[in-house]
Image (cartoon, rainbow, N blue to C red; front, top):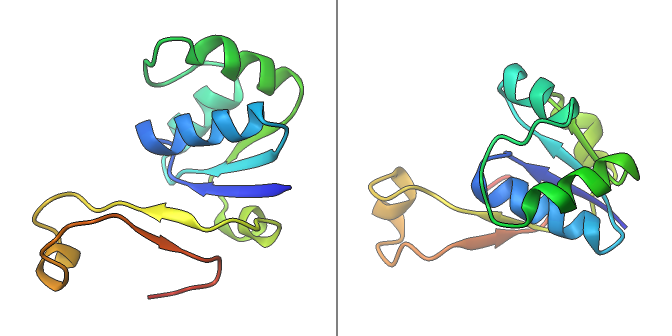
Length: 109
């Protein structure tokens, strides 16, 4: 399955690497060219115990790719993505419970 992950911070990168480890083709998108360049070159940008080995293995197997271009990456994605907002953001005012939401691809809310 092709999966697109938007954002390669802690949640996005760990999720993407774990989905790649399960055999999926993962496209991780980030708007920071420096982060995309580092990840594409095999340099992990966060620390999570055990993540480095899984990351390197899946990068070598070409199961995970990094890009700054959203459109081609989400074209083949089939899963929804977690929508996580920092406390105090606009969504907190709309949904005071602050619970993560999940969107299907193409949902522009």
